[in-house]
Image 1 (cartoon, rainbow, N blue to C red):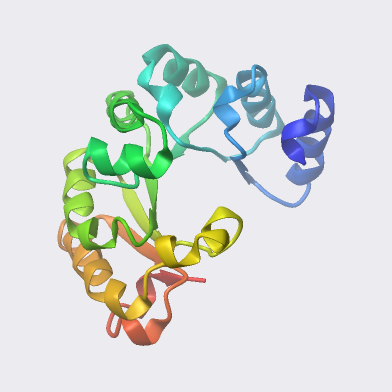
Image 2 (tube, rainbow, N blue to C red):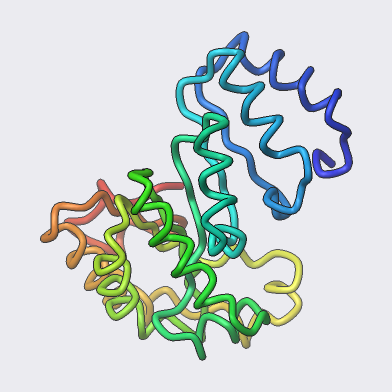
Length: 208
């Protein structure tokens, strides 16, 4: 697993990747827990990567210094995850009390620093009815792009399938309403892993 590799090995992998790509995404696990993340981002910039994205739960960005250090090192795109429009819902889904406040604050910090923010929200049985409200919150936070990703039934989601995975037929209209809010506001929006037949007229916004 990449999370288990040391700094030297990851620097080598970055160099290898640069031979055929000019964009890089640091993801995990939770990459902001790595003590060498700033060093690795800096190395990616030195190698000439044009886009350097940090994919994260966003909680460490509540501390502005962490944002400033990564931006100074060369990170220029950030993808935090926000799964609910309220602290009660988001914290329930992340199982981390206070995570909604931290991630929301992190998004504000990044926007104040002029950074592109692309959020990801996983669609579950608990939050699908609230996707339009979540979209309104993301617009208020001024994110540049948001994505609604249908939960992949793997791992714990597979084990608790009936409690976690909703029916696509029930989800579709809420996804459509959430996407439409962003489209009307001129934002980049997309959804992931939803069959196109459930979103007629919005096929261009579907990935996977």
